[in-house]
Image 1 (tube, helix red, strand yellow):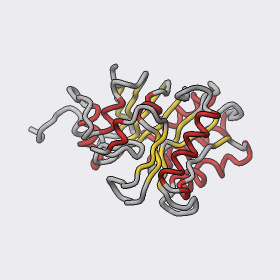
Image 2 (cartoon, helix red, strand yellow; image 1 turned 90 degrees about the vertical axis):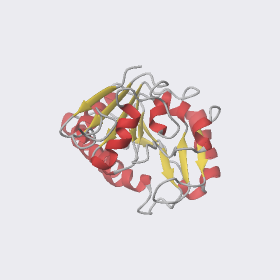
Image 3 (cartoon, helix red, strand yellow; image 1 turned 135 degrees about the vertical axis):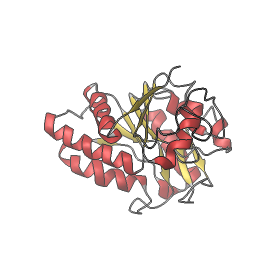
Length: 242
């Protein structure tokens, strides 16, 4: 498939627009952690209140979670609650969280059960999956070289050892679960992500377990990458700048 790469002034605001479109279509949305997604959720909240978006047919899910208590500052849920769920409390949005406090294996089994009971299909057909990319090329909590990258029968896996800070166990959707979405959107800002973006999505990039985000390219139905100038700075060359 062809990857759509957009270099925009405010990737978070562009992402929020896509979220509004998914909600207006009554589609489910998979959320991700990180500072840029936090800004996207804040823009989304503003748009929901501004144009009175109906969220009654939309359920929010999460792509991965750290195995910490839900009020821990490292929790993706805590960030999502503060930036999106609480400000939308008047609309009581549906949200299915990963229970990181259960630990990686029990937490993964719990979310797998919820997905198979409520997801509506196997795997679920989400309208929109939001993803970040780490400096090491990981996405969700699927890290380079780990066995989770080859999982094909499960929708959710426990990740006993994180490949990047914070070094706590994780729960993550698998590649087949992520790839089942109608649309996948990667968000990346800052020059610390530039090398990983180039390896995953640059011209001539090939699927490579050393860059897990690249493994979604051939499997996704639709994949877009929203970047600022810094994150896109190495996208069009593979060596040192000439």
